[in-house]
Length: 308
Ligand code: URA
Image 1 (cartoon, rainbow, N blue to C red):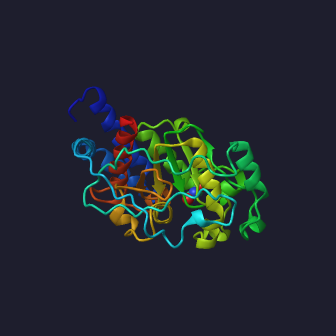
Image 2: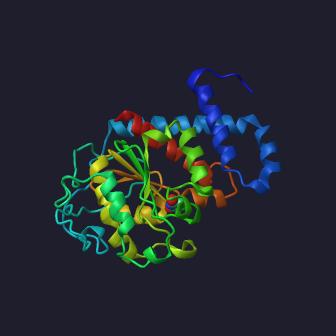
Image 3: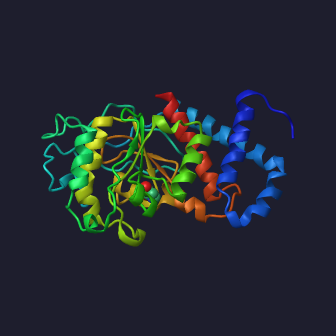
């Protein structure tokens, strides 16, 4: 393998690291064999760099997304019965484009201040969540799982709901999927302590079933309050459910929209990505596979994060 210098070499190592973390345990043998074929790693790094170049090009030709106020998504969490009357204005979802692109840097902060919560705090939100009985999940939860990380984060990652490990520990993304997420974000150069990580639901759905709409609706004001305090510049949606809720139910499935930026119901640009659990289940590491796509996406997200 040709020796590489500086960041190029680092990128190459990161590519190797990400590929290894996304390997299925059953594939340990083939993984060893593939690692001995360096060209594949070089390709990944080069392809990642190519995408970053495209991103930068796209940035210089920034397209302004549609932000208007006609039809509010029928599922909108912001019409929740909780006392949040300063609901953000609805926005229409950004038109889907075939290439990843950035959204306008136009300042849109529809979250602050939220009426009735002008003196809000993370302690208060945690307390409110721990007392919450707005849906049936309060009967089966072991612990509430409000969120973790930097309360001034530029980027908030939002998953769908806690699983069994999260329910036990009261911290999001600490199970198998979470460990993969940790490695993915580290491989892309993020420091976990700089990010805030949470879910739409703050309690675990039994048997890890998907969150239902009613649960998401009553739980969203907590997320809304968290975002209002954090004031992030960017949101990363982890998985189909998060993307469809945070962006719009009318967008196509995650396999078609991943790697793209959208307006979100919170007025903060949101980036669609695969859920780490999906990546754990996916065996392929070939170009075009979900694991490969995630590597492109997380690096594109990091490039955008670094640019603001
Ligand atoms: N999956 C999620 O969406 N969130 C978690 O916290 C854990 C697994």
